[in-house]
Image (cartoon, rainbow, N blue to C red):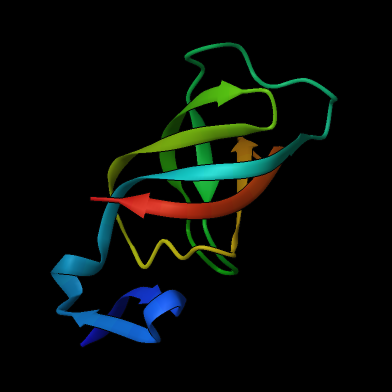
Length: 103
């Protein structure tokens, strides 16, 4: 079993089988860009969701320093509080903090 959700307001931890801990997208906050501006609209990027994550193809929907990353395939344990970093090949574009994930 894996932690799927933590609900501090009710002091509850929700656990589920691995397949229920997969996410197709996540919401992001406090996004910063290395170049000072985001990539062109619709430009595919590679998203790394934690240390040693191999990366996954993704597209971004952005609104100032907030946004949503949509993954090409479901990702395991997309965890609020961790960073998502975006790349174009080996070039770091920027990143933000994962706020929540969606199936």
